[in-house]
View 1 (tube, helix red, strand yellow):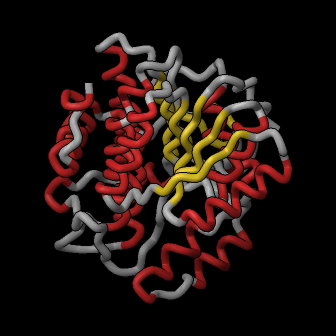
View 2 (cartoon, rainbow, N blue to C red; view 1 turned 45 degrees about the horizontal axis):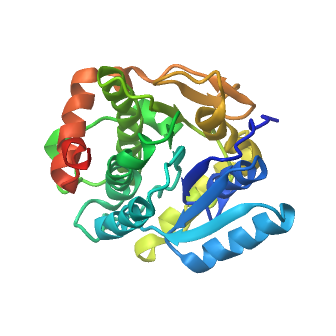
View 3 (cartoon, rainbow, N blue to C red; view 1 turned 90 degrees about the vertical axis):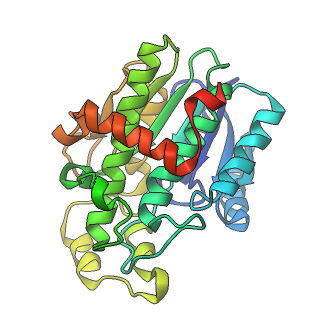
Length: 304
């Protein structure tokens, strides 16, 4: 099992930290000494996760704050509160997500739900928190992508899936967008000589409620095929599934634009892997970044 290095004196924000890989990442960061903010949509579930972490590690410094990535006003409020407190942010773990929503739903801002929750919300959060990140000595942004990014495509002609909607197509596009954001942020950091390390990860095939919760949104039902496949295809629990993200966020061996996943693709200890070819298209990534700034109204120039 990956041993998280000492994190005493560091402040970490983990999105989607009430369950699955997010809760496991938060638990292990707190156990290593970090002060951890559980950024969750439902504070009650966050408090339950906090209690579980404190029960296992009584000295853990863990707090719960509300963050709904499907609502840019919530993202702004969360970021503004942290900025007002002024403490440097050492680690941002963009972990929260939603998958395979059966019908096209929209966020509070009118974005397709998977694109908005998985990419545009985390994008806005990351950019808004840049002042705090850049005030830390060695800040990192670790963003969770997915194996699905390999088959994703950024469709600028129908980015919001208004003409045609497919649950898996929309999900794969959103996770490819996450990975392109990771790589482009690494390029921006290099160009501006920032100490910021932007690193990506994917969890392989990890058993969480992600694939079960998404299909029930909008009155849908859990996909029987997905449930059956989960019992047949090799998989792992959140304890291992969180390790690529933890490695990206804390390993001294992680490099700018690095990408980590399970060694045996679906399962196993964290291992460096090559981003899919489409994720490495710098022209598309730059265009996507500009489009995200336009859609969210959040720009690097305005934050710094």
